[in-house]
Length: 534
Image 1 (cartoon, rainbow, N blue to C red):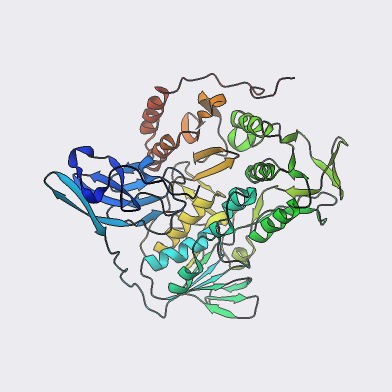
Image 2: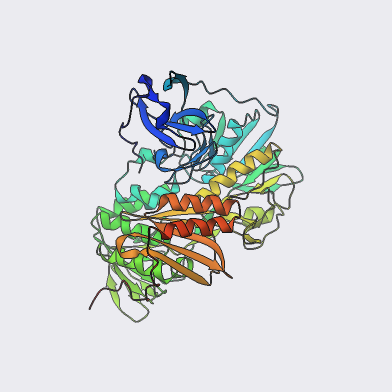
């Protein structure tokens, strides 16, 4: 990902027939060396940049809903009238072009000038954001895009400017992406928009009555509104030797650089954990020609969150690339050149990576007086029990309108979209956070997209053929569709997202029936469906 589509289709500057694009359709073409997408909405013709501003996803392969076009890769959303990036992970707009119809032909002229936002608030108002990750960065960016005129202070424990943490375990770790892919926004963006980055700095105390944040360097920041986006820390399992020099975790850019450096010396790694991070690390290091062993207590990877069918599929994908699994086992001890499993099996290795999940950083929220319950409890506007203090990202537990219960989700896109909603509510817009959670994972060349949320599904329906890398899994709670996973079906994933967003389960069923016209329903594969033959 991250590459723009090659120029294709007609040159719109020379004109195209109006008959080539009907209501609700898009047409890909170009103006000079720029890819441009024509969009017909309610008889009006719009022209916008053809690639998502996040990683260049092809918008012509996305989903058009009214005046909003959704990227098929990471589900960003743009307004075709203005080019505005309305839904993360895209944080910057796409270009808009002027159109003209002459003699039944559509001509695309020069780019439209994006108007500056109307200033809101006063320069004396102060926002403090604790956390330099997805939620904090998207909040700061949205505040400026919404015209906030006051001071924005970001406080980040990290030594690096905000970066795309999801890439650390994917393309960057595998060696398929340069480091300049990682920044969420360029340093010039923060400078231009007067967003003060306080890096390598901790917030150590919050006085909610005085509305102050004390920093680790002794400074005191005053705030009118405060966002807590403190994220999480990797869980360190109680294993003898886990603190050894040959043991690493992956959470920060510094961690990732350390792992990459170790790959230059070592040739074999043991990954402890078969969750999303563990499997992505296994796939990435395999592409660096490192022999990978994965140890996990479950019978299949990701069985608790995605079920036996997806777990067996992922196991098959990894094994076909040489990854060796030690499932149903735990690590008894880590030595300098090997790990000892609970059955006393010895697995030789040069280094170890622990991927045992994260625990949310709740200490600061608790000290500030925020109500906690397996996370920081927030209302539908993402405000905590302490007025003026908001929470977003890995720590936030919000009322989900679909499951009708509070949920906490550790997904990058959820964090970014929550940060955007917080920014709007800091400006008193009363915007409810009601987005459907979405995440994607990359396992070698396989992209798996998951929309919805369930930590207690009681039934799964498998559509298509996993052996052909073209299938989907529908997850149910009490006969209600709660989540949809797909491989090779980005458009269907987007359609299900939109239906779930509206809490329109009949529409979800209609989409699935249409899906079945192209895919034969299969009986759920048995647990050993993908087991290699003896």
